[in-house]
Each structure stands twice: as structure tokens, then as C-alpha cells.
Image 1: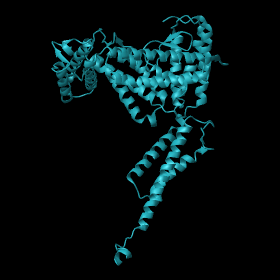
Image 2: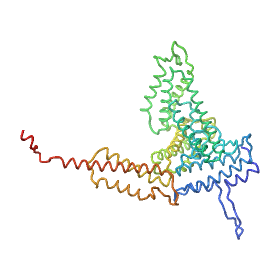
Image 3: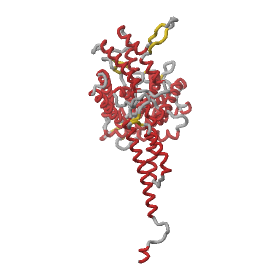
Image 4: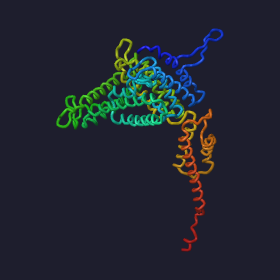
Amino acid sequence: MAPVPQEELPILEALIKYAFAASAGLTLIPISRSIRNRLTALKKDRGEFIKASDVNQQYQAVVKQITKLNDIRDDNSTYNNRLDTTLADVFSLLSLFYLTIGKTRDAPATYCQIASMRVSAYSYPARRVSCTPVAAVRRQILNHMNESAVYNETDLAPFHRRLTELRSIVQQDGEQAKHPKALTKLLERQLNECDAIVEQLQESLAVISPELMPVHQKLVTVRRQLVALAAKEGSQKAELKPLQEELRRIDSLSTFPTRVDGKFLGAGGVIPSSQAICSSLLEECFEISHEIKANEDSKNVASSLKPIYDRLSEIRFELENLVMTHRWSLRETDLWNYSLSLQEIDKMRVDGKFVDSEGNRPSGQFVLLYLLRRCYGLIYRLLSSSEPVSEELMPVANKLTTVKKCLNEVLKYGGPFNPRDLYPYQLALFQIDSMRKDGRFIGVDGTIPEGQGIINANLSECHELLKESMDEGETEEDDEEDFDYSGSESDEPAKQ
């Protein structure tokens, strides 16, 4: 990494260094904190909700430093020094703050989401600045897919959709000039790189001949099941056996396409162009199955790699819990620490493999890579599922979601309902209604948090469901009043 030029040092200091002043006793006391320290302190403060004003203040401070850097650097050079990586770290964390306060439709919020898909070195919002953000983790989902060569069209479709959504957000903000042009160019450049990666992945699928496409898809599915099985603890004999039988069936295909002498043959005995892809994938599946069987007693991972396995398993467990409870417990900035841990683990690989102290490649590689990629996928899933509701209003949104679900269940199973049955829902909606002022939810600092439209729409829907339940109860009562409980027939039939 290149050294930081003298003229760029003040910018780096603003990002990472404290400012000190001498007291009367000649001791140094901090008079201001760096931007990164302020963001880190804000992230750690769980006593209060994160305020949009605090995030905007830090965003403006970062933009100010980026503007200074743009004035120093030229357009035709590529840079990569400590300042670039620090800027990337700061902006990645800042992007997570935008998700936390519910500004998911703002361009800065897209930074960490795009970065979680990207593979190559990043360009930062200074001119032609190339860097690798810490929170984005060096090797992410797309390059791990490319590295493993285990994917199909179904896997790539969600990335296409998400990139289209993020591009729409960036373009809209650019047209409205809500953010500096340097930021818009940065995000567009990242989006273009992600599109290029996805296109590259699609091109590699295009070479697979139509007759081998079903075989390839089946092998992709089997391989994923195998690596997931390898990551499990305990005996896997019962689950491994059907997968091995499926591999043997593919290896001995007698119907079109056939497999003769270790080669897949198409119509007329012609070897398809994608022969090498499917054959290597089949061999890899056999290799994984053999490794599972051989290492079953040693819990799949060599002792030298056990610390990495334990750490990845711990991260995976915590992220999977967040996926289940993120509406109630996740603050998007919490993902920062997980990203840092994954980056450190990913950097341990040499030529794509984990090695021990002697440079050997112990058994258990597939297990560790599966866990690493699984953790990346969970972080991306959590980022993508972030709702445009501020942290301050999430308790209200969650309560409304619960009331709405309960009312739908009440209507599903039918009445009759009396006021006593529906009173808990009336009380809950009354409490939420009383929190509004002039039809809006007001934050503790007097501002209007993000998510007003979504919460008000859900509140109105809950009131409609409640009214429908009450109307159904009244209808049941009317029917009961009209019904003759005496068991006698009416007069007219008696006369007949």
C-alpha cells in the first residue's frame, strides 16, 4: 500500500485522530473526536435511539473531507493508500446508519448493500480512488460464487432484481441532486462492476449445452446438500447415503444424455462443449462425499483449523438468530463487527485455501468455505430485508404487525365476537393512536422519524380489520335474535 502524501494527512487525521489541547497542568485532554470514533461511539450507544440529525451531521463531515480530497487529487490517477481504506471503512459504517434510521431509499444506504455483493477493489468518492471497505469484506458473495462455480440461473435472478432496485435509488437521488456528484458516480461505478460480475457468471452458464443443463442443475443441488451436511456435527450416514446414490446414478447414466468412460455424451454420441464443467463438478461432489465419510469421526475439520471452524460456527449461529428476530433485535450497525470478523478470516486463505502453521492444507476446507459463504449470505439477507422505518419507530411497527396478524387470525376462524373479545386489540390501537400528534409520530428530539407512511397505512388497515370483526359479531347477534329457539314450527305450515 502506498504511503499517504503530506497534503492528504490532514484529511486522514480528521477521520481517525483525536484533537488534543494542553490543560493548566500540562496534561493533554481531548477537545474533539475523529469522525470514525464518533460513528463508533454512536454505534455502541444502546441507551438511546440513533437520531437522523446525528447521522446527517457525520455524513456532512465525511462529504467535507471527500470534497477536500477531490480538490487535491486528479482525475486520471488511481490511488490506494491508508486514507482510501479509512474512507471506505467510515462510509460503510455510515451507510449502515442510514439503514438504521430507516432511510433505505437514500443513495448512501445503498453503499453497504452494493458492497456486500462486490468482488473487486472499490473506488471511493474521491476521484479514481481504489480501495477495499472493511465492512464490505474483501471477498463477497459474487466472487465466492464465481470461485466455487456452483450456481445456476435461479441463483443469479435475485441479484439482478436487487441491482435494478439499487440503481433506481441512485439514479433518482442523482436527478434530484440530493447528494454530491462524486457519491453518485461512485455508486454507479460499483453498480456497473456488480452488473459485469453477474454477466460474467451468466456467460459461464451459457456454455452449458441444453442436454446437460438438467445434469448441471442436479449436481449444483447435490453439492450444496453435501457441504451443508459436512458442516453438521455428529453422524451423517443416513443423510449421506441417498446423496451418494444420486451421484452414482448420474455417473452411470444410460439414458440421454449418457455417460460412457467417464464422459457425458449428447445426441449421436457427440461430447457436449460443457463436458468439462459437469465432469469436474461430479468429481468434486464425490470428493466431498468421501471427505465427509472419512472425517466423520473427527467432526469434519482438522484440529489445526478447529479455531476457525468454531469462530465461523459462532458467527453463523448469531446471524441465523438475527434473521429470525431482526425485526425486534437488529440494529443494522451491529453487522459491522460481523463483517470485520469475516474479513479477518477470509484473509487467512492462501490461494483460496486455509493453511496450517506449516503451510499445509488440512482436511475440512469445504466445511470452512461453506460456513464462510453462509455467513456472507446471511449478512446480505439482513441488509436486503432492512425496512424503511427508523429504529425509533420499529417498536410501533412491530406492535402493529402483531395486532394485524392476530386480527387476521380472528377473522379467519370466525366469531361471534363480543366487545370483551376485541378489547385487547382496541386498547393496543388506541395506545398507538395516542402516540401521534397531528397524524404523525414525533421523535424524542421533536423530529419526524422515517416510516410514517408505512406505519399509518398499517394502522388504518388494523382499524379496518377491527371494524370488520365487530361488524361480524353484530351480524351473528342479529342472526341469533331472528332464530326461533322454541323448536316449534311457524303458524303457516301448521295451517297447511
